[in-house]
Image (cartoon, rainbow, N blue to C red; front, side, top):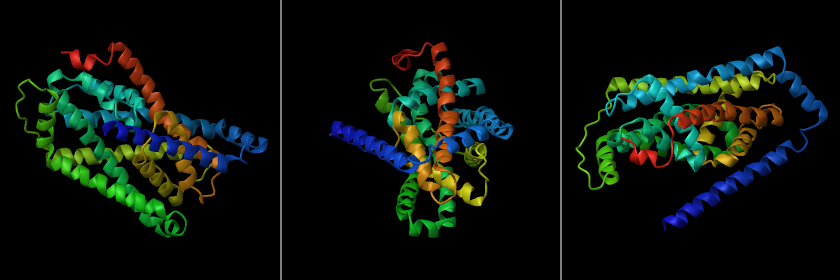
Length: 323
């Protein structure tokens, strides 16, 4: 049964990827004229274009630095680590997350920076912590949908239904995870460490910690949006309220739709072409910007994470044997 579910999951995600390639082909078929490519090239290499791209790159340490602080904050009741260690943990997780759909392997690299007896609880906190960022993406995305509700009713009504259903389920899951954090931590710890004595642990999300986690998640989300807007501006796109709501919808949909790393760039480009369909932006610009934001936020941090893992002498047995 488990094997069938895994196969079905792979098939669904592969079909999403193939559909994305088809959408890109339909939208970009007539875009690559010599004149249009020349205009894009000139815009990207202009002083303004280079400045926008350089600033988006400069925001990478801020983006992942905020995530490292959140990671340090949420894991502190289990094990205190330095900010430097938390940063290494986060970058390593970004790298290893590319190995599985939905970045399911990210936690494997992150937990090796913690004591072996704490890793089951840290694993749970990885998924709970991710839901704080997800909830901000969903909440802001809901406001964007309300702003553009008439447009979706006329053309892409399915976006409204998918987003609201998926978003509400995710927010409820976060609420349940916070409320039942102690049973989750203790149950999973005992399941993973069979045969070894495991003491019950009491973990509490204080109001101050919750405010910090949500606040820094919102700040990080703002950095994401700023980076995307900078990459659009690199190609002389004027940023207005319509573009901003499109950016928030883009992040919302890319968060809720399952991804396969090998097809992720194509899926993201296809989503951008759908979300910004009536925004008056060149399809080529949309495709390039969506791929660039993926390179800036995932691929470059993954390279840094790979270097960190090499220095850690990481292998798949390490998280089982290291003490």
